[in-house]
Length: 248
Image (cartoon, rainbow, N blue to C red):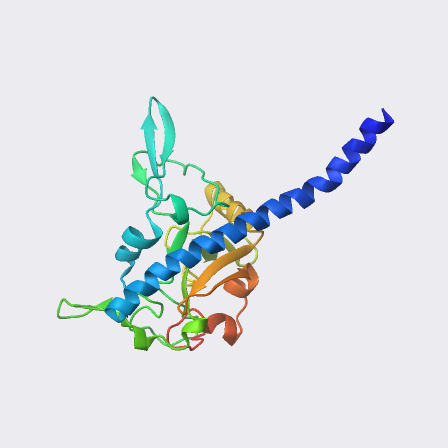
């Protein structure tokens, strides 16, 4: 009995260590995935001299989110658009309430399409990320490679996560949730409900409250939620915007 008790104590002590090591391994694998996806993005930029629109990135680079289908009376997930390097090994899927025969549009990885403008920032003429804008003449204005200042500090791709502001949410402070709109910091809306709480929990455990991100120069980093989404210093805000300004 004494030996069994000692083994149980050792197991309880070692389990968190093994869990943390497993999470770190998944995060390293995820960063490797992002590096390969970022190289695909940069290959497009090199060929075209501009960054692609979001639809191209979803279709050709990061992949599409899972379909939730009814099969034999059961709700199942179809992940055909999110395989290989397009799938974060730390991501856990959960069927959204009320979704049947529909697309969640939430892939493992997303594009920094919108950038960031704070409540005191100037009114935007368009997104400050890598997404272009539709011109009045019907043409699409792409973000040129030359428009992106300091590529080594400009976010390009990352884990599909976004800021969940405390305003309009169930939370007493800003937090981070899984995103259905790419990699997004813009403080424009909150959300409430049990399903939202689930997305907050899954975001936190995915990489132990870190987000893996790839930059416009091709390198990849793991940033804490605080540095990526919650801090309001110039360094944290500038990395979202192609003009290298904080816009707070």
